[in-house]
Length: 124
Image (cartoon, rainbow, N blue to C red; front, top):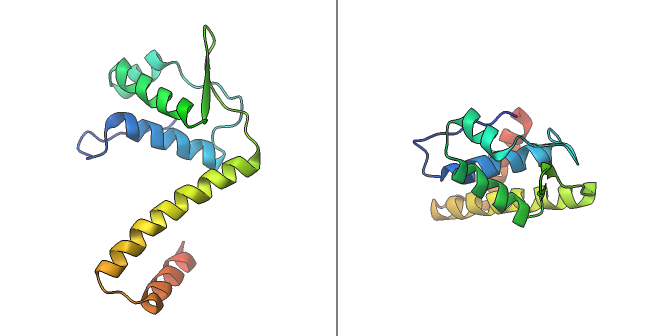
């Protein structure tokens, strides 16, 4: 599993891990029922404490992205494509809302914002 953490980021380490696993699930890189690394092995691989990876897994479980089976490990939850799509849309809407609020604070009009959005959308 590809997870890159930054010690200089303002985002807590457990949240960085959580966000990246969630992103990999939503993008389809991690599939339903796929086994995740154990808490200990992920902590060792990322060179973080076991408590950090345990918290990331706990948060993912609370949000319904993974399930932990005692004695067997943690797995990506079996979810319908509709639920995954809904979660991805919610995350995207939240990010867009932050960007729109920032644009409004800067005095950028809807027309200017739309042009910027279209330009970036076409480049990607």
